[in-house]
Amino acid sequence: MQVEPFTFNPFMTNCYLCHDQGEAVLIDASCDAEAECAQVKEVIEEYGLDVRHLLLTHAHVDHIFGCRFFEEQFGQRFKAHEAAVPFIERAEEQAAAFGVEVDPPSMPTTFLAEGDTIPFGDVTLEVLYTPGHSPDSISFVHRPSRQAITGDVLFQNSIGRTQGLPETSRAQLLDAITEKLLPLGDDVTIYPGHGPTTTIGQERAQNPFVQEALQQ
Image (cartoon, rainbow, N blue to C red; front, side):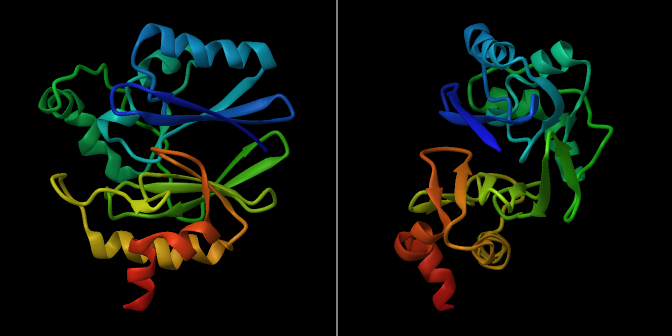
């Protein structure tokens, strides 16, 4: 599985285009400006990709700026965990609280849960339920290539924010990291919602929040 990363919008949120054998999934369309959306579209066209699925790790406003654009481009809706529904319903209100505007995605008609799979090309992504930063947080894992897209769960030397946001739980987040992500193995590459790529092994060894959780 090839992963094309992008970083967009004032919140510096990562968007990922994952592809294999001419088919692709787009995860977290964080592109805000027209030029940002065009950048992703150009890569899709350059590789001649058939985008099979539009996916959200969670529906916080900084991850959904470009959703409506790609829904219209590819004639499909984003798939998300069912707990994303109230966040999508309140997306414009959430955006206003941060001083920005958003054209929210359509309400999902396909909801994803722990153990679901997302096929494209010769790849099958596995869905892990990893709440804490948000009740709808899910991660997408491809075990054969040792890669995972984790949204705002685990970052390089940090974890997802659990203060000042609705429906967060630090304990739940740390449980998701220790029970769902760390068992994937130290050689697994993590593509986070913000910041640089890292690995499970690096975070096990250096991340103070992970070490705190493991000591409890």
